[in-house]
Length: 305
Image (cartoon, rainbow, N blue to C red; front, side):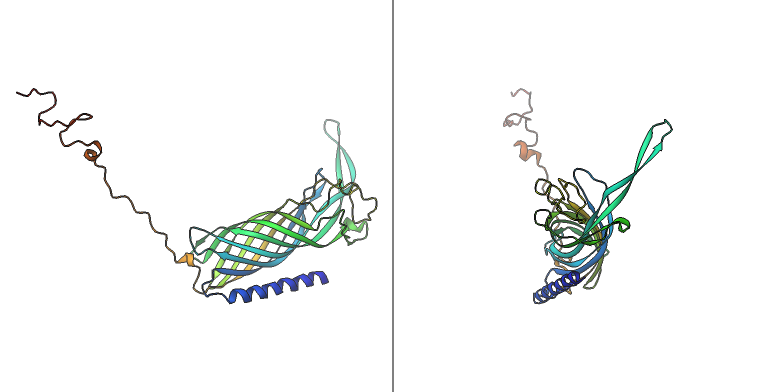
């Protein structure tokens, strides 16, 4: 809990610094600063495949800064987020088998898994591009998000289903665990604009590329570990994915509104030129088609006396 409070104070401190910097800018600054918070789920993609399931109830909160281009042809915003995010996974470390006889007489195995849960607390920093459109006379903003995500794993804990083994804090080991992570993120959402205040909702999916555990080439087995590591052999791949749903409350540092609201794109003028057949063919009225002009004034094919 003390660790969580420490990072809450860090994020609040960063918010105060950013507000002071943005407030000092010109009144037409194209910025917004938002606080975000919500819940979601986390999932591990082990290779070779293991029995896993989604771990729900993962919280997140943080700050979101956006800069909006004043030119309409560059639709959208760029920005950066700083979030405290709870991640983790559920891994079926053991199972009990139940055999059921099928109609054809064959036996079918049904496995009842016992799950190990790992909770990971992380600081996450997405670098975001956010294209959007406005509706309802600029009172509704609908957007998509694409981001490159970097993260640092602060702390972790573990537990076993039905308290089969005592829960505890997960001890990080340099040969076994990865503190840093990276991946990609995509999402969508909307914001309602009330004056300089924005209230919105967004959903996003973080697709992990880095591994939470170093593979078995570096850390083969858990012979020297305790109950914190349930893997007999380390997986070759162990990226974490996150699905989050968040509410946002933002402030626009521009009382007038964004410049793109008031910039009208020039309409493309239609060409007023008309096609002049005589000018294109070089002929005159009554002249030959495809031949030299009839300088004598007679019709083609007539005999001059």
